[in-house]
Amino acid sequence: MTARAGNAALLEAVAISKRFGGLSALAEVSLAVARGEIFGLIGPNGAGKTTLFNVLTGLYAPDAGEFMFDGERLTGMKPYRVAACGIARTFQNIRLFANMSALENVMVGRHVRTRARVPGAVLRNAATRAEEREIASRAYELLDYVGIAGRAAQPAYGLAYGDQRRLEIARALATEPKLLALDEPAAGMNATERAELKRLLERIRASGVTLLLIEHDVRLVMGLCDRVAVLDYGRKIAEGVPLTVQHDPAVIDAYLGGALA
Amino acid sequence: MSDLAQWWKKIGRDRRVVWAATLALALLLVALPFVTDWAIGRTWVRIAAFVLLYIMLALGLNIVVGYAGLLDLGYVAFFAVGAYFYALLASPHFGLHLPFWLLLPAGAAVACGFGVLLGAPTLRLRGDYLAIVTLGFGEIIRIFLLNLNAPINITNGPQGVNLIDPIRLGDLSLGQTHTVLGFPFPAVYNYYYLFLALTFAVIFVSVRLEDSRIGRAWAAIREDEVAAAAMGINTRDMKLLAFAMGASFGGVSGGLFAGFQGFVSPESFTIIESIMILCMVVLGGMGHIPGVILGAVLLVVLPEALRYLGPLQQVLFGHVLADPADLRLLVFGLALILVMLLRPSGLWPSALRRRELAAGGGAAADGRA
Image (tube, rainbow over all chains, first blue to last red; front, side, top):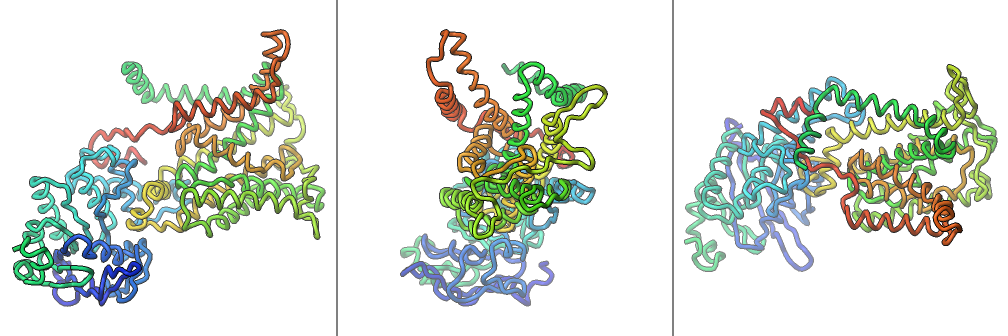
């Protein structure tokens, strides 16, 4: 997919606005994510990053503006349709299916790319059996890919925090996304885990998936992202390569005078 | 204790032991009417048939409550729809006598439609709010049945529908005694065997649905609806499907009930019935088929068995101290409270996924196939 990079953006947000009562969570935010890149979304707490994710994935309807994704208008689509279009996400406060096993969590991710209905499920004909085998083996591969194959049978709630984050990524990858949207994937991770995560995300990008990433850990963002956009009070105050953005006065100001500098 | 558990695990994997156990269970179930009739009387064969009927109902509700996690307090409405559908089309009430093989699937389909009818407006509701709406729905159906005798008499109101045709399979009427190989098979035996067959069909469908793409989608919705939707599950369709599937089981049971009883009236479909069916699911172990079956067996058998409290007092004290009818409900209520206190997740909850993945994805896949 990286071969096609350069020309059209994979994801384009055009003047997205979202208000909650009197609070303007997003004010005419526009950005474009190119195919194959790792795009970082940063900003202080409450800047509107997660809101942007929620609007993007159909959880909220925007008050104005629209998202174009791979030539399609996403605006107004239900979350499941957005997932079918090729956007998968993880959540800031991990939202796994806690009582299901790690493997089953990832198998759920295959739902959108498989088709067995009630008659197939009940009769378990050859096609359904083949599909079930494909679902399970693909799910197992993905667990292996993120490095937690050994935990396949464990219920999700029993996994270590870092493993839960990986499991969320594996589950999202199971939907075969073109764009993987990660909401603070490194939150709560120690230095070793962060380094492993960085390698994992680079591998995912190398496999042709575009990454959109909300992250607080500045070193991770700077080391990983091709470009970043900075949100503050719902407005985009900067966009560009990490090094430039890092020295942008508006950004330094937003982060209380020099946390980034 | 762990030795016992290991031993249990070991013999559970032995194919011969599994076959022997299955065979023993099958023989037991086939012989049950004869043994019960001989040992404790024909009433108990009738109760056994009711146990099977309630297993079907509880497994239907289990799809909605146990699999999809949608609390439904009006489930008996679908039972009522199935029962009246059969009653009205196979009785002198309208002079229609349609055959059972047609009415059974049609009744399931009609109940299915009612399931969608209930499901559609409640899609945005969760938990308590959903429970209240479903409760109302259950009552609406009952009150309709009670009042649809004027201006046009459709349901015959509180008198109910009488003289419903017994279930007939081809030329074989289940309402008569048949003699096979010298053994007499009275009506209640015939119904028992029919219910037994259909109960196995319902269990089969439940098992297959649970371990499928659909079952996983339901479980995901139950666990976290937002995450399920973000993973590409059409939560609206999947919830409607759960309501429809659950309702169709209720519709089938209703048709069987009408044919078995020969009489239906709105009185059989009160809120208490819904609560009882829900109790079977919760008490046994939500979402776990053996648990739900156990719940249904206990909640049908226990109230009946407690009728013997009167004679028991006679034997123990020489006279009846407390009215057995009152005592029965008291003991029953106490038993429910105790179970919920001591085993809050049900008598037989599903063992928390300790699936053994011996090695590799291939093994995982084969284990599920």
